[in-house]
Length: 305
Image (cartoon, rainbow, N blue to C red):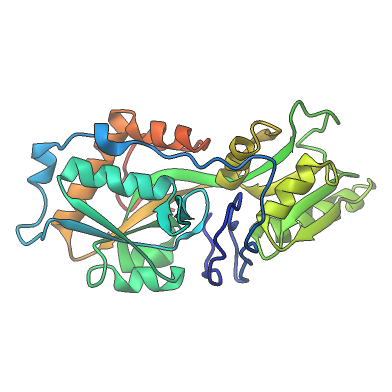
């Protein structure tokens, strides 16, 4: 569930999360200095991933040895600017790109781009796009897409669910969302369903940054947080377990690695490398490092959606 439009320029600091999935509207990045109760930045050590000669041999004869990846580094925990200097490409998609490079015996160069500009540049400026792109019919007309993760929406509550909330009945609660997100729109639908059923409406509190939503859940100002599943799961990790997921992931859909349609050899090599990382458990381990679920087991090419 990746946004359709790109975010504004990133304000880097010790932010918890940078954005959630948006629809037609744009989300706003947090201001510099926003934090929550805990903010440690995980990373996966890809140095243990070894080259697979048979897969590396699948690369095009004219491959120059560097896998160039287009990314929109404004969507924690998948891809954002972090590290000691706040300027280093970081996140589970970045870790994945590096792991794919290890399997292929290639250097990896991750470059920031506006989200909407990535797919048009596949095959010219970038070899691939790994940017939490939902697989849909429009994108499948433009590029090949290799499925690698399933993401949706989740509710989160304070650890232990002290108010004993039921994800199937959140009527009468106070719900926090980030403005401009899918969940921002859905919260009103959920509230309307409550009033239609004769129950108390949901009080929806909207915040300009996901960090603010998380902070207010930890502090008890809101009862429940509604966000993208990777965002909510990462928030639980970053707060040291002060919040937890309520219920299951809803509206889950696959995301894919984008490769040029006319580059069958590179597509096949990346698909084989992705499947290898799945089979070896590396991909699941990368997501575990970031506190995120949703790893797929099959690197399906251009799945029906």
